[in-house]
Length: 66
Image 1 (cartoon, rainbow, N blue to C red):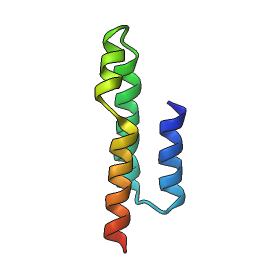
Image 2 (image 1 turned 120 degrees about the vertical axis):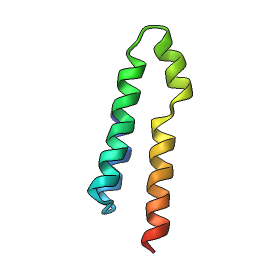
Image 3 (image 1 turned 60 degrees about the horizontal axis):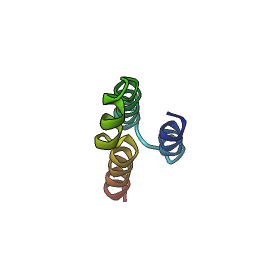
């Protein structure tokens, strides 16, 4: 939840474009909704790593922006 939003906040601070931020927020939303399901949510959280996905997106954007 909040830690995932912090990654998005830092991406915004670095100047990431809005479409990238929207995609990152979508990853966070999927994680929050999927993680809310009892028992299955724990399995979902182990498989769907929003922070890692978002860091990959941000790193890719930073590499292309140079």
